[in-house]
Length: 541
Image (cartoon, rainbow, N blue to C red; front, side, top):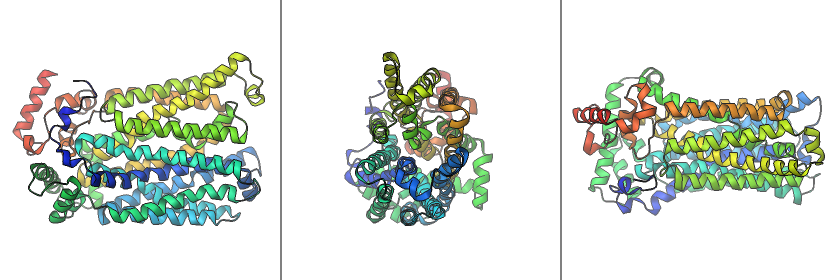
């Protein structure tokens, strides 16, 4: 069968399951990704605006002091997000996914109300961005966790990656807000930088209102022992009666897995969960996938390009304020379109591994081209604009390469980091695993955001891009050996995949566990029938 043929995986999914209630819930939690994108897109333009520079004296001191001041402001949300990702683990399991959404919206709102009322106080800017970061950090756990728990397995990748795509909805809104403010508002007015920041307040307030229109996930309710409510919520989401085989099998899968987990870990504390995550080989492998995807993805250059897009376009010859901000707008459109193209048409149809391979390859080639171009064409020549005909064509190619790298990132690391991190963990470890991995995500993003201004000074722009290309190459090798294909697998069948020997999970895991995992087939991943299926798969492989 071709990679775009989904008849086999959709065969056991009743048509009623794909309904407006499911899609509305997915929309509310999926749009959460815009929080990160808004900040990544807005903050780089904000610190570069004349009005912000005048109010906060950004040009004071040496170049190193200026770079440090800029990186402190831009990275403060990432610093708050580290704590927010850890806070999400506690709240997600204790009060549920929906109440956690409401809590994070309140923090997000409060933080940016403080920011826009700073009036020259840089300390207040930092405090407001840290508080907002607490809420934004929670979104990366709460959003994917909810989505992966309500999505039918046949389209889980597509629905979960609505969140990843929304990151670039936020980026696009941010870029156009900065561009509009730069050309329409006076450079001497603080409203030039304040007006774009109000997009945060609009998004956070809207999501806080919409959070009261969605229901809690059946999996969380089952974990809390509220089985009757879990059944009602599942029937509401699936638009099927309580006695329908699809509903009964889905609930039985969830209960069976939860009972096995509780039996194996009876009496363990929250610290016991952490010990379980890092000492049990199958869980440790899942955790490794999350950690390495964040490390390699964050240092591949995409996050830095998003945040410092205006500076990079200026380095490529787009020196005018309006010109470089318009170039960032085009980047936002490219990333948004490519992210949703990947979510709707590639990640479930093309597969996780193929998408990741293709995306990283595109990103590597594009970034390498930019590095070579900047190393060959002198910086002063680019700044003056006095380029030869061939150099102008090469410069246009370098700008196009930035856009291509954005498409590669959306197809590769961006789709992978949220989806796989949310779908591979068992129920009781999902919030913990996602929180720790996303905490590591923001640690890396904080370090990356802080380091980039200094790296550009010490390594030059071409050296920075060359470094990112090397990281991408390492990422390709890691994907080839370690990343398994999880397309079409139920959440409860992941145990069989990660129970394989570690050296088989990435290269042969999908083939070895084919036909293993549904309640009807397995009745628990340790059963004799599962073992027989896996032995037969080994023989075939």
